[in-house]
Length: 498
Image (cartoon, rainbow, N blue to C red):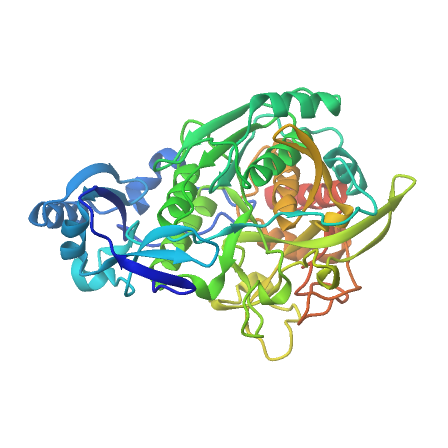
């Protein structure tokens, strides 16, 4: 990944070993997404058809031996091999120059001066080498209100306003949360859920390539927001938190590990982190796409935030941008709204756009990297645009109508599209429980159902794009009418069985 928005400090002169992840090509055809109600691929047998080719693994092993690199792990199912070596050995092996860099906010990392091209050194059997460039690739899409919120909600209240099915709690499901930093303390969870009159849900930590539950930093707000929203609205579900470093290696490994996890078996994956689509290197983008493709083929519904910086996604070139991985065709992308309620009913819901007061705005737009999928045929993309439209759905995200949560011993209010991802994850966990089968890639079903099962958001904009009737590039189809949406899915399930 070429270095941008960072200052070069000098060469990376150290003998401390580094570990990289090589992502290999598939041994067969690409798997088809499990468009519900199509039965998903079985995790336990996935590698037999779609894992790494044993011959490719041996080629990489030979390459590693030639260059004095140590193999530390190999996962045929996930198509990954980890290699360890000194910076000098890695530079010679992969033809790169490693340097020390510093970001505008003072963070230092090891990076490559030029973009790595795996095929030039390893041939077509390796699609990515991750971990040589360790810049932060994503940011958490949460917003803490800078001024007094106008109206705030518990997650339970938001679920009630959105008509979440009352007779389901996500029992039998596991929600995977991808976290690239931060952590939580158990006493915060216990106090928070007790304050809502709820039991503390089952939460397990999964360490990914050196990541761990490390509370004490700004990212704690993201971790606790995700757990508290998902846990309050899917009380019966297990929550598995995958902690990974904020690098392309960490992000890829977390998604891949969660997708293939035969112990926790997630049926829903919630991602509240991302970055502008064009900031990703080609190899990192392709690797991430392959991990997401694995997930939906195995019946995992992957949900991601659309971003909190309006249609620019925080870029400064005065052009619209969308956030990745939200822009992936394998991801249910979540935009944001400003929600008002009275007498236990929604009184107003518009596009979240508080940029005038520096309180953020929902992401959304059209991808320049991902073509429009078949399930978006017939929707009205913004004039002149032809890629994958973002987002698909929406929910309350404005910090001025935010969520009451507890972070590091303090009760606070947080918004952002990062709250909408676990909000939808909990809803889909409830759906999976009732339907008896995972939704997997839900796009086809949701786009067929369309406006009737959503609160259509028709007022507001996110900068470059305006809301309108039906799907739009601010809030997708809108916020959910939970029970109505479940009824429609059950009708589709019945029709497919007859």
